[in-house]
Length: 221
Length: 79
Image (cartoon, rainbow over all chains, first blue to last red; front, side, top):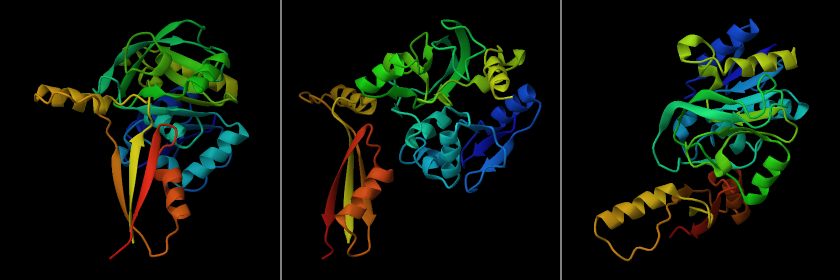
């Protein structure tokens, strides 16, 4: 798998995802700067990492979504290349219009930073094939703006089309219908607030995130 | 010329920040505050002749997220 990690000013989980990808796929990802206009030829997986791109100015992810590299990311996503956006990456995907809805300030207003229980809502996607539907897993969360909101029609459509990948199994941030991660309509773009790349080896306190990348590797390779 | 863009959350969109401000006002003893909604004010210093359509396009493309926010433009002709 030839993966690329997009690095924005203020990204801070780019190295975490790079380590996770290198460990699972056996190949270090290309680190692509936000000002670049092209992805490396043959890129077959793109990750938008967590962090605080552009200091969360205007809205979380708003400036990054308009960065020069995002044209190439959007084109690749439309071509069917798998794209994952984790935490700030999820915010960027919604701001870029690649995923519906928006991520607002946590309902409790506090920054939430702890491992949380998640339910796998759909194990039939590129990203969740290594899990069982209904399985409870644990990923860490670390965010201030993770409160997923969309209009009722959009929420109904996401649920009806099996596009809710993960839900929180405990109260975390006030997200509509406890949504933690969603897929685009083609199923090749996943955005989620919890951090699978921080749960890939026993020292992290659990390896539940590793299976996401293992499943993806199997699907892409 | 200058323009001001007022960005507010759409009605019905949860505003935790407004709620916290509301509680703080109550804590300070201000009774009779029914609701608080927080928004943003963006001031633009623009080339003369910038059209309404251009400013609206700026709002739609970047300044506001129309999934959750409304915007209102107020032009201020330079004196």
